[in-house]
Image 1 (cartoon, one colour):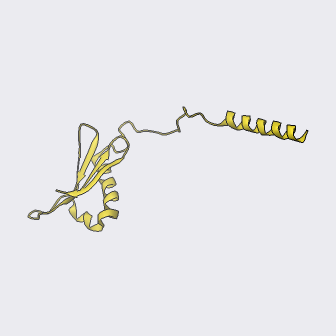
Image 2 (cartoon, rainbow, N blue to C red):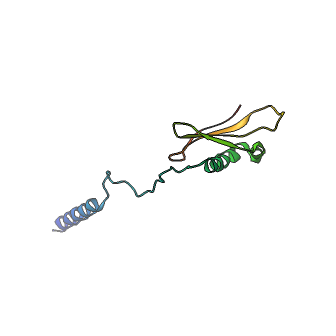
Length: 109
């Protein structure tokens, strides 16, 4: 009798758990801004700096002003500038306008 009651209790618990579980078709609540998570050049530049500093150090800030350009595929291309007369490389970041994904980070010309 105890085995039957235990089996019944386990079955009821399993049914209750399964019926209350969210389905895989449900999506979590999330607001997506109409202009994407990176709507403008200023936001793209702030994100790029946040990514660059741990990689290249504070010295990357000497490459100001930073320039951000949006391409027709919705990707921000952010790069640093060199003072006039200097030669070398600048930091580069490619960031998705839609969701803020960092697509590429480099330190090139």
